[in-house]
Each structure stands twice: as C-alpha cells, then as structure tokens.
Length: 151
Image 1 (cartoon, rainbow, N blue to C red):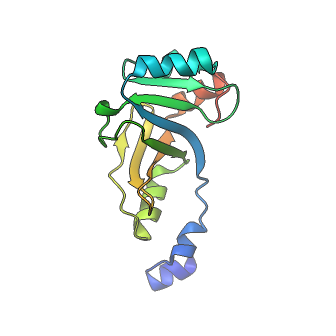
Image 2 (cartoon, rainbow, N blue to C red):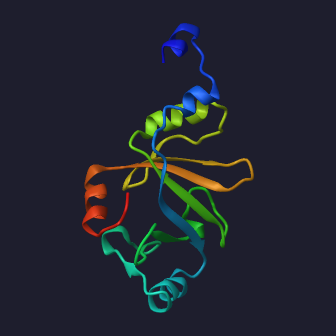
Image 3 (cartoon, rainbow, N blue to C red):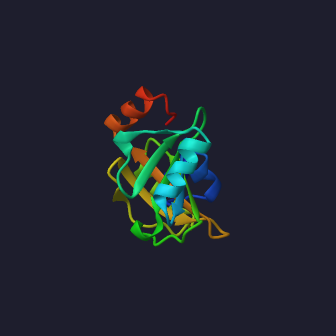
C-alpha cells in the first residue's frame, strides 16, 4: 500500500494481491420455461427450493452439497441474458473494494446495484462470459447459513 500511495498508481498485481476473497456463491441459469426447468431440477435431480429466495421469475435451488443454482426467466433480467446462458456469481465481503479494484485494472464493470439480497455489479470476462460480484446483506447471509448454504 505504501508504494501505491507514494506513486499514486497501482499495478494489476498489487491490486489483485489485496485478496478480496472471491468465492462462488451462485450459478444463475437463464431459462424460457421456468416451471418446466424447475420441475427438472427438483423432481429429477432432487434439489430443494428455498422459498425465502424464490418468486415467480427467480427460483433458488439448493443441491445436496456445493454451490446453489438460481433459475431466472431470461426476459426478466436487466442484462437481457439469452435463454441458455449462465452467470457465475462471486461473493465478496467488500463489493465496493472489488468494484474499484476491477475498474482500476481495466475491467469494464457495471454500476453497483441493489439486487434485493445485497449489492452487486456485473461484467464479462475476456471471452464474454457473464460474471457478477455480490456482497450479501447480513440477514440474507444468516438465512443462507440457516439453510446450510455456503456464502
């Protein structure tokens, strides 16, 4: 940090060394027929719907272990994701710090927005894969832990 303050600039390595603790928190699948896809994940794969995180256009699914999955109607997304696309949601403890760090190294990031469960921003990797970075609100994080869902 002293080098950054002295020079007024940061290198990509220096910024990434801050280790904001990116962790996979959710995989979001964009679907056309949410009821049909929900039935597949629940009835065929045995995943559990978590009602507190579910509504008509967003279904939160808990697998027996690992990262949860969300089904979302494609036309109901801000990013206008296409049916069949996926978004990897990374969780951090400091969404503002992550936003600043990624922007500082040249990543084209969207604005930080309230997503209901916390604050997040979205961007794409060099190949165009959708990514989101979120910081959950404490009450949402506590509810996830209550259900045994990693955060």
